[in-house]
Image 1 (tube, rainbow, N blue to C red):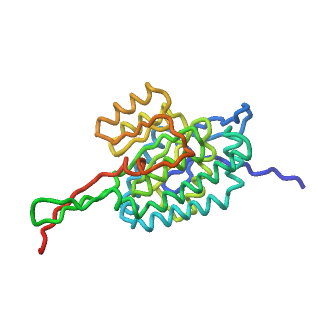
Image 2 (cartoon, one colour):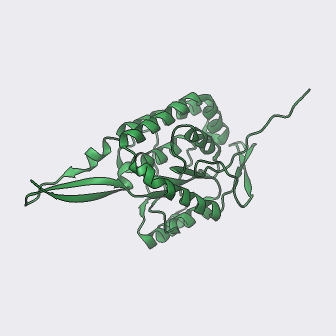
Length: 285
């Protein structure tokens, strides 16, 4: 007896769950050659608002976890990604990132990038913090703390680029709402399946698929979003509009020039969404 195969439905990832868009909308995803691959959810403003609520709810627990624990969880994500290497190699390739060999190299680089950031989890405070000399009988200590909820517009690179913008945000204790690459969103949702089974608390990473021009300004204007990463925005007018919206509640904004994801990322992305707090403590008290 013949049977019909069960085709995968690509949904959103909000609060650790995989809901459909509340709007019921979707859009077709095609390969570089124009072949139909799948339908992806077309997230609405309501979905974006739900994602911000989920990220805010997860922030106290995630920022309160020890850096060592956050590093362990990122390492676990890398382990799970390594285990699904073949599946991920197929999806970026079918989404137009190049041939099979290039896709495998991209997956391997994404795994290595996660491990790299995991290793920084309990070191960034030592590098970015300081014990300051002061003229008085006090200890003066500066320590970095996470900003809060960060909205990230992911770059076109469907996996390595995505991992390279998400990992530095969450390893330092922030939570995030990510707008996946509009033309190549499938790898992002498959990555969400890895996150959901990697001990990462629900709500730390929330993934939306849909129109960048529809979601980015809404997130930029949201008063409960504390930071904005515009890496994936190539439209200069849209980027300027997002920056203006973000200024309303003094969000930290990252709008980098075109980046090469294959080179050493440095610590700039980790420190961009950190706030430095300084405390005074009397000596001998």
